[in-house]
Length: 153
Image 1 (cartoon, rainbow, N blue to C red):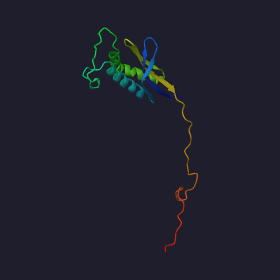
Image 2: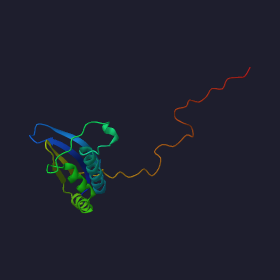
Image 3: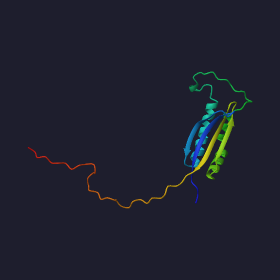
Image 4: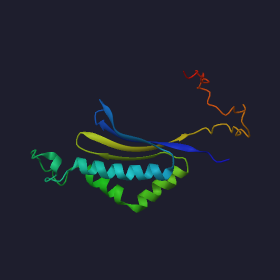
């Protein structure tokens, strides 16, 4: 009998010194395909948030400082991971086997971890459908009282 899984999907940010951890995004998937699709979309979205375009409208003219090219670039690694078809297929295979998957990138002050964890799901017991009504219908709704007829003067 094959095991059935649900998938807990998270994107976590942790400080490098281990003093804090926060959940940036979370999702509960019912299939490996949905979990992998969520991971790909979330990695792409957070790559854009980590390195926004200078003309992005949501910045509202905020001053930006360009990071040195030799420094850590988690946005580049996240974008490359999200755009790779081979890695996407690898995630699907790993999750279909019932194994967890994690991808980690590091910045100057934080470590970002994309985690996809399979969770075993118990199947509900099979309950047979009722073949017939258990109570005969009277033709009237149960919530109504019979009307009393009043004589017309």
